[in-house]
Image 1 (cartoon, rainbow, N blue to C red):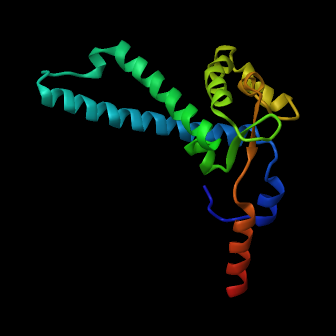
Image 2: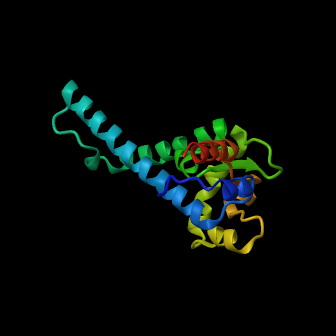
Length: 170
């Protein structure tokens, strides 16, 4: 991943619908983050439970509890930041933001609907994601259901000023 700023491109893309590659990369970062944080929290919880006195407790022996915990954690990981800021960690890394269909800020209701509807795109053999390629507004099935869109949104003007400042000092 390059940290080099492309100010003209960045300003031009600001507010445009995000494409499938950027959205996929963002999701992969989020999926990795969910898995790592869940594994760390699970290891810490296993340690605490063993410390209290349960001999040889592992979540591997309690797969229903572990699976339920993962689903709840993933839901919270995606829904809370979307409701608060319109972006997850992965979306922030790639300069993406979830907004309502009219461009206004996402609220809690729309964020929760979007997160709940996401698995439908997977369950329909990826058809929900294929819509990103087909539709002009690049909205996936979960976006259509929740009345949201994913757009490029980063501080491109500030990046351009930093770029120009670097350039003039050289």
